[in-house]
Image 1 (spheres, rainbow over the protein chains, first blue to last red):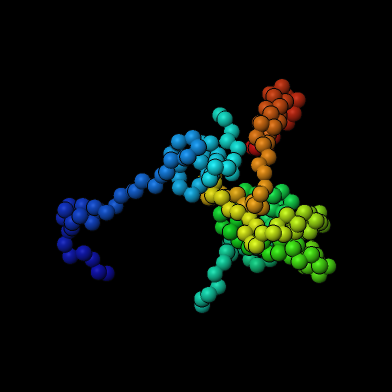
Image 2: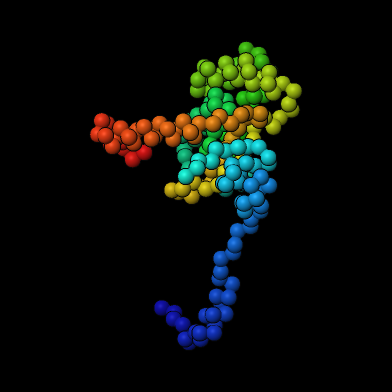
Length: 60
Length: 149
């Protein structure tokens, strides 16, 4: 079976991993309640989208 | 190869897929708006639009074509008597999909599929009240424990 000839250095591993990270999702401000929300989706806080489209939000 | 065969399979065989979509389309026509997953909404949307196009034609043949697809006679009646007239002046775009966010449990993105011009019916308060009453009944031992609702 083929095997690695040399041990990788720590630097080589770290260099490979420089692009491994999570990115923050984009967010926009809800025009109705000014809470942050995901773009193109109903605001989970007030249940509106494009000024109407009320989805009922249940108060906890 | 499945070149140029775009569409939604929804992890079902053709018969199950057709049943599912017929049910969704019937529900949209009867209830005005439904909440489902994004792919199911996208698959059902063109079918709802086609039903409304049939309703605008308003012939006996069109009515039978719709009855062949829809699951309840009541939905066919509503489609031809109400929706055909309601969308008479609108050239397409009878339905709307709005993304709602992700479902707790399996993370599937939910969407609302509605007939344009439908109204939101406020039912959350009613539902909460019923649940409260049910929980009270269980606490007082008058009723059996509900199966994980």
